Image (cartoon, rainbow, N blue to C red; front, side, top):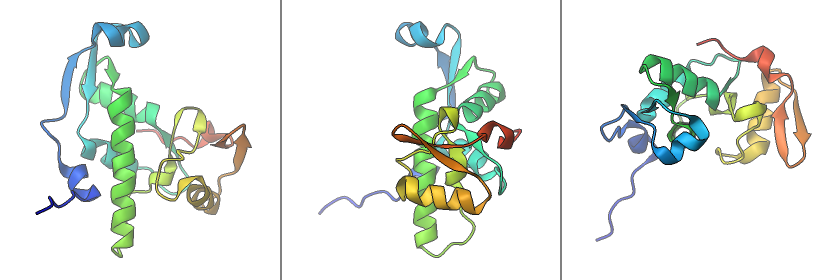
Length: 157
């Protein structure tokens, strides 16, 4: 019998022993320097994404910085923070498809430089519509779509 696939919601709440703070590896130190890195639990990333009110924005870097301070680490893991934001976005979309009205507003979480994350549910087009509906201006920059003057709309955590 085939194993039932985990829902996005299940993945969001499966902390796998996280969060944890570890030493930055030698390989990682070339890019990030020395010190420690926090690998957050997926739900921690989701909780921060949920705090972003209508009309405001956050970037993965702000989430990483907040989590690093919270866990007294040098940095927040750039890979897991991004992956867990992606999991949170898909869990929100799954909840919306199940008829839930209050979901994590994943479209308000941007990549570095105010770039819309094309890997979130619905891709750039859906997020662009949702962001414009909240009063943001979106522009194309090469192959990417960015929120114009996103820095002025960043939420303070």
